Length: 113
Image (cartoon, rainbow, N blue to C red):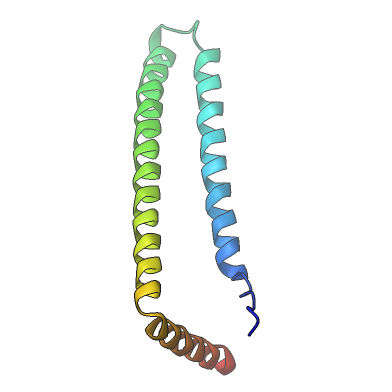
């Protein structure tokens, strides 16, 4: 019996690319905002100074929140992947049945369109 490779789900791969692109865009936006704030370093007085200080606080908070969320989501994804792996190893035939059932449902929905 030969092992067949299961094709990678293209839609899921595109979602991963979109998420990676979103993270990259957000980091680029943060870097650009930092550069803009540094460029206005000589403008400490008046309205520009208050906007600059508020922007620095917001940017710092956003960086911290983004870092926490990214770490938390990574940890949760690892736990889910490990749980799924354990389930498949303990119950291989149930996993095959679930996959077949989902494939059938998805096929029926695609056929209707």
